[in-house]
Length: 312
Ligand code: ING
Image 1 (cartoon, rainbow, N blue to C red):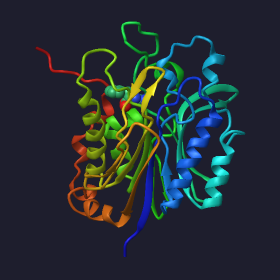
Image 2 (image 1 turned 135 degrees about the vertical axis):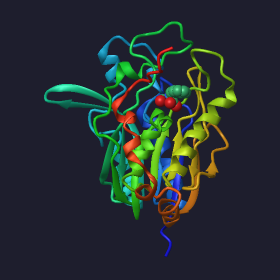
Image 3 (image 1 turned 120 degrees about the horizontal axis):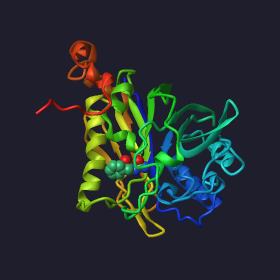
Image 4 (image 1 turned 30 degrees about the vertical axis):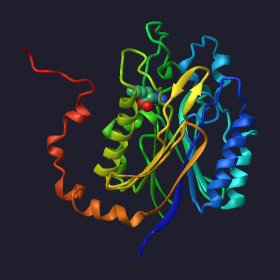
């Protein structure tokens, strides 16, 4: 029998540096209610979806940086998301900047949570692959200071039984690394929820605009196909204080095809009715890992971080 579930990628249009959380939460609630009205059981919001993409800005004062972080989740301004989810019986995935104390020391993570239809936090993920640079780089047309503002995620790539299936999460740059999807694939993942903030230009060299969107979909379609899992991906899109972010939010099938895709760079719901049972055939045939993988030949993947080429 089918395991049908209707899901949504809730693309967010731009969030300006001057926009307050209350105005953003109001937009998120509108998308959540629209998703519920369309029969969705899960709505996926983007990475760092409560504020502008602040890693594009140089900030030297920790208080200025911490203003973009959530010290509690739910907090006073986000609790209404959890209450509304429980009222409607819809789950959600939310990306945000997490400030937490560990052994008395502050830790800063680029985090995503999975919340079920009763408003309970089912799982948490902290971004592992932090792109960009740690020191301001004025050779770039815009900064990308994720290595400066965030610690490397320390939770691995877990999956959870939720929404009648096996659900995992990753965040933005994580999707460009096949290891991300494979570690979840080795845990039987059937739906990967992810959000992204992807600048629409390469800040280091000329790159044709269309390649940004091509690479965005390429890596997610490959991850979906090679692990026979759905991918529900929500962009923060549009121009934030003069800096453009691509859209392209989408829902991808376990055979790699895009089932639904955003048409704008604004707040937009991308919806599809999916059947989680359709992950099974790929996992039992082409990507039957137990039958086909040869881990005795894969050692370098975990033994070597950077590439080492043979001597001349
Ligand atoms: N953003 C970008 C992303 O991985 C990036 C950074 C863009 C890296 C293009 C490489 C190429 O989509 C985040 N937030 O990771």
